Length: 77
Image 1 (cartoon, rainbow, N blue to C red):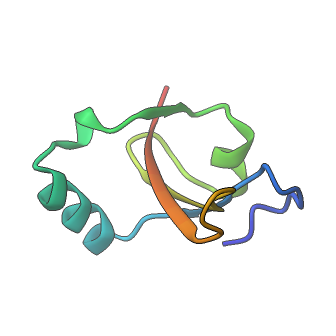
Image 2 (cartoon, rainbow, N blue to C red):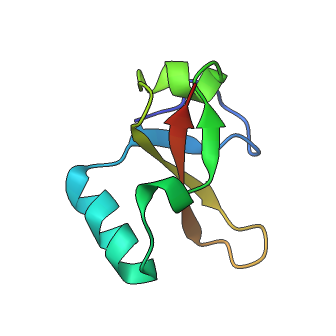
């Protein structure tokens, strides 16, 4: 999903699929509550049409390698 904001410092955002979330949790041996949080009133949450307890997947280009990097946040109140 496109974030709707065009700026090099604003990452693309999408709701992570169940498969992506389960693979992420298994890869790092963590639980949902171990993920970094993003507040439900943040602009990126609204842009993605996400709700509390959903996991957002952010994609941004590394300034060093130029490769796409993924990071995840769980939406909280």
